Image 1 (cartoon, rainbow, N blue to C red):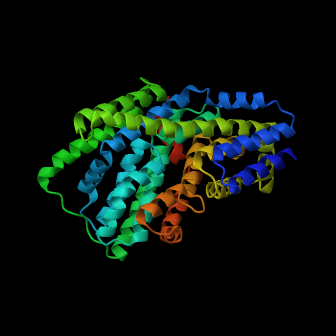
Image 2 (tube, helix red, strand yellow):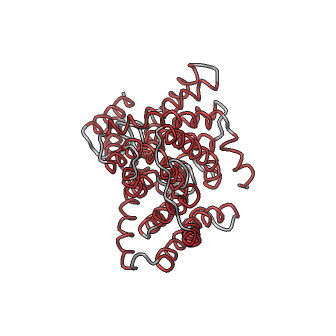
Image 3 (cartoon, rainbow, N blue to C red):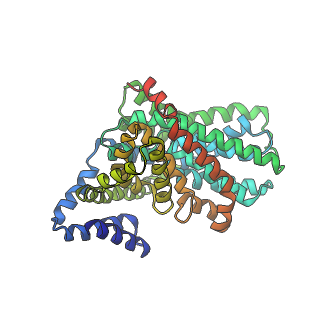
Length: 426
């Protein structure tokens, strides 16, 4: 009955359009009341869920992304990608994907990629003769790289939920799958561009190239600082995030000089708003997850999944299906916190390393971000492209195939996620 009350009340609050964090808290309180649990215990669990040194990296990652985005990094990365691959057929579409690869290494957010780059590239693609639904599909599917390519604050959330998984190992584990995802999307993008005879990209004059390369790589160096600090052992993930934010501040305000220092106040306000939402979700999900443990839901789910088939491959496929279905109806951060304690033991029992599971989890839930009915990134893309969500979804159909293919490869080829951590992370 406790399990029924917990999930039924949560679903009812979602149907009533309550915010997810508030739905988690209210359903936890109702269930706690039924189980005669002191509300103070739930509050302690919420606070305990935030009591993690690793979580201190999140505000710095968010701040670095906000600074670079406000300072014109989007335009510079677009120019950099245009220099590298913009001249071929469908060049602007390929530039879109490559820019998301670059930007994912700075923002760590699929939503930031889609909103920042999409507001520039979708109108540009439409103006050059690309179909509306194709422009949106390329943008939102490429944005999924943001949760895979380090640094990713969602991986920090997973590391906390999983109970001490190395953030550096997760970052390195997501790099190859993220690049594979980008390469696969680029291949499909180019194939469709040739098939539909989309235009070639604009030619950039030779005298512009040195400036574009210099400014573009200066922006990308933010991610290099963060990853280099972690892998060298000089900095922790939190310290690297802080150094990265400081570097982004210096580059934006004293090298690029596109905006005035007075804009820093607006950047900080946006950062605090985003951080408040993230931390509220983490705290609410911690209380909800504790009740799941009290009600022994992880053990029940684990026994149920493992009893379906003795074959580990079948168990992993069931986990993928569950994650894809959940990703269609819930946002990423709360799902990470709720699904990890339930499904991680099942994955480990099926022979999956926690780092490997974390990378698979990120990719599966990233696909949920571009899948209706609650795909937030898809909604952003359709809004920028000024089209219905139904039409945007139709344009996504071939890209869904690529995303699922890469997800299966990442799931069933562990070395894609585990090779770099085994070599680089000590």
